[in-house]
Length: 492
Image 1 (cartoon, rainbow, N blue to C red):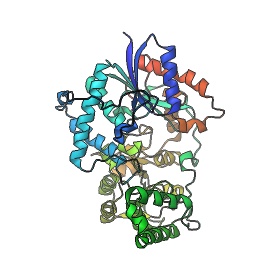
Image 2 (cartoon, one colour):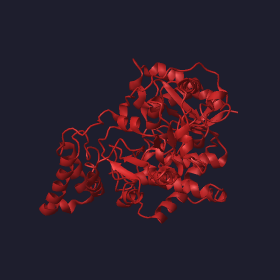
Image 3 (tube, rainbow, N blue to C red):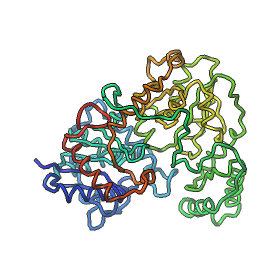
Image 4 (cartoon, one colour):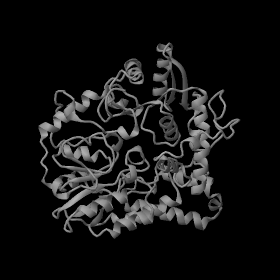
């Protein structure tokens, strides 16, 4: 029987891969329902922004839709309430306080109403097109892909999720979100992969972030542009009120003068919430901290991101993770918390920092504090799923994680749970040869190719056509059930 495929692909490179699949495997792929940009069957962003924008020449997802009750057959599932919570968290990134192209949901009931409507509508799309397989080019975390994943899971469809790794020309695969990081290195015979001890990893997405204070900044042209955009869209009356306009500009200037020049807080977005957030955190920019006392290092992860919203589970609430961490530490061990230098107001309201300040051993360090030094001098590193844990392992430091991450099965990594013991972590010694063996085993389970356009820069002389020709048969094997997943038990 030919597979009938639904695929989430919102970028040109993955859409090109889809096109090759339909051309080369038309005898196997009978139908393809593409959720993506304007050239797809359904426009993804119209679901999260709740707009009337539709794919070119196609109907809008809500056109002609009536209640059919498909959701009601699955509301008795044990994880149904959890699924709703995840969807709301993923959709909240499109709230008007955090982006210009926002939805208009205003309260919890609005989110619930929209979830029930969208589930009902999209489930009908899946069923009426007799979809048998779903392919995701990233771990679902943007609400429209989240709800389609939940529908596929509820209907028992074949699901394949692929996502890019940090390593050039390598991507991961898994049959479910929960499988991410599920891997037993000792079960896979492979040569060890060399890991240079104490190497500092150069992460391209942190290119403009420095590990020093440097000179302070001043208001940039980008910031002014975003301030005016915000006022024009959200507060047009302010543009005609010199007093209020002056107040915003003065407050903005004060923030820039107290932050490092390399940190441009309003380069991408401005909102009065962002203004209040930065006014709050600049108080920590001159905080003192002692590297000679025993401490663990907890750098906060950027939100909203897949790494917390999709892979963090309950610990997408990072304050909760720090509260749990505090409960297992001796009284004399500090927790040095460093804000992500790219973070804005999302999930960082005054109550978040109030929770942190209530924890007696928490010290909030400046955003420019050197993360490599903090890692080197710490007892161990703590993170939800962040790359800082991998950086720690390379330096011979242990890592305590709270979510699902790709390196979670490596020696020296501990996952927080009821039995987590401070003494066990402290007394564990990382065997570097064992770490290299585990790393080699993981690389042997990765797939060659690029499925995320942002990672093409890691591949020297990247050739898109050659990449697509190599990725297509790998994806088809996973969809057929003939290829082995990176994470999750057994073959696809």
